[in-house]
Length: 203
Image 1 (tube, rainbow, N blue to C red):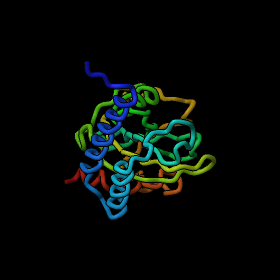
Image 2 (cartoon, rainbow, N blue to C red):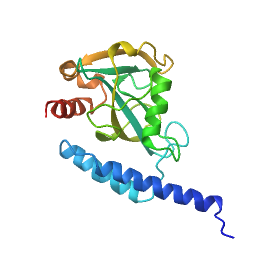
Image 3 (cartoon, helix red, strand yellow):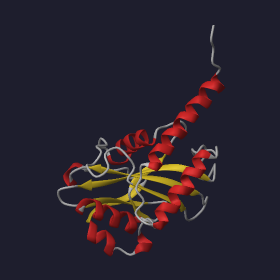
């Protein structure tokens, strides 16, 4: 009789998820040299066997995987940003990928928890990540987030509640308004993401 112990099954699942992640990363078309470098670094990180998932808040392991999701009202051309209490910045919604979780499943889970809506992939990238960043966080427990950025579609009027423990406010901005926001009030890559999105929507 064939049997697989728990460790063997876990190792197989880990290998499958690493292969899945590598495929997702290779599917992202880099916007600029910084994204190209981040993608190469992320592929190397996944292939190298390092731990991928946060197992203890805020910084264990010191590098871990995050799924961001930028909610876009495609008709109005506006993005939803949230005022993150701990970061002190306006950010897209998102969260840490749980151990052995597919990054898209993180998007679905966090979208329900944070914005009380169902995740619907936008026409821009479908259910695949559109952008990739590697960022060192600020403040206590500094660590590095390897972030897959997804784009979701939702109407402005559909978001009527949000996680007030995590966010102090939310706002919708046009793409040009996002670019006019001071960079030090946003995720450090938000302007780059917005320019990439503008190019994709006009292409």
